[in-house]
Image (cartoon, rainbow, N blue to C red; front, side):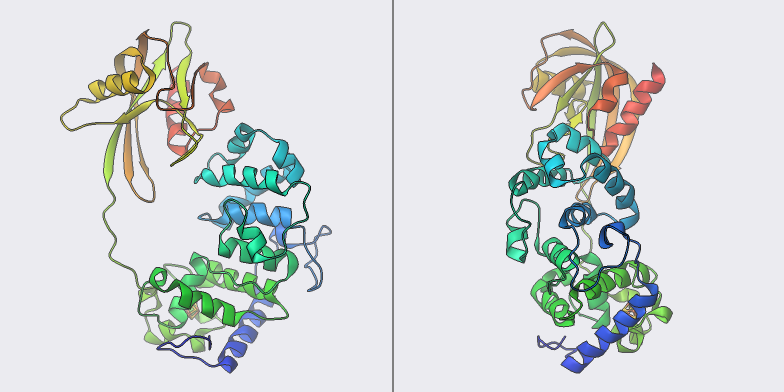
Length: 375
Ligand code: SF4
């Protein structure tokens, strides 16, 4: 990490030693069984051996905000249904969303689909800029794809690596405030001959040893170089800003049934949180409003229908990264008005048993289970 002035200034020989220690540890203890990091015949690739970028790209986008153990079953299912970029490009967005259902951050699925349509019939990009020109790909995802697939010397800087670097140097500020500095450290650590391996080793160190709450410093190859370890309390890093309390909102939700037992669902607009997902209609409870009044008002405003609000079906608490929501869900009977998508893309009457054909956000899975348990 010699490239940038810092309180913990290091020299190039430090970087070389850190690389050697890390690669030595990784050889014996790294995660070498990640399926998209192996050749078709299941071997570790030689430095001059490219890997198929398609499975790596899919995995790297899934891994944004999500851990490897969660991603693996999704990735296997995805590769079975969409084994090539061509298969992904011709799929419907609805199919893509259904396979993504449960992974969260749903705009990632839409952008993968858009990017596949751009990529079909073209050679795979082989530069950071080429990958970053595609929808949904930032610098660290592009760096990971370039180094993993083509062994190109492109740095990465995901959340795990920010934590490792902040601890290694006992960095006195939250990493988000010093992005450029941390990128320069990651770049300085790159091994010109083995960028694929060093990036994977950095990710493995962050994921398996230098974990957020209980780092395994006794087994860490960088222990004797690590300022946080030397302090005796490595969990003091990375330094964070005081967390802001998350806003809390109550959402009234109507599960509206018609005379033949169908239930009304609507598809969210493409842009914004959970864009394109299906949901049961509803909205924020206003001050002084009962939940029944809230649901009746929201259904009138969003769908142009009148309902009678009946018994509570379920209450579901769900935390997003930026807010906490409580969904209070009531059964409703449709009284009047043809449902219209006044605040959504489309509305549909669906038999409860067919709800599995639509992609819903995680919070709605409990509502569906409660509805099915009732019938
Ligand atoms: S010694 Fe501990 S805190 Fe430092 S990099 Fe290794 S695991 Fe992380």
